[in-house]
Image (tube, rainbow, N blue to C red; front, side):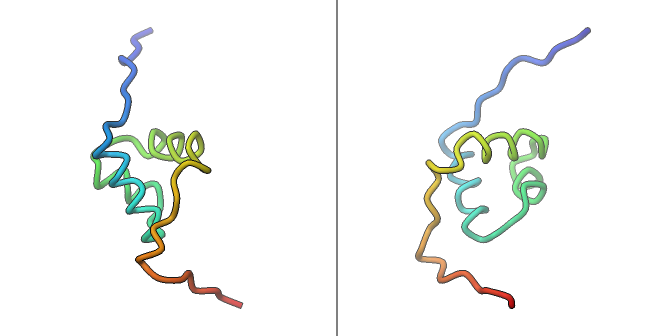
Length: 65
């Protein structure tokens, strides 16, 4: 079995993820921007769910009822 070396996101990549989350992008869209596997982005989001604050400068979230 061939395994890939473990890869950590850089600080700049994490900032791109944070901005993507603030713009309510899907993990697949963020992954496409970073040219990485969508699973890696979703794992990063799950791992750091509470540590990534939402950028409130973007504006309030829209609610759909």
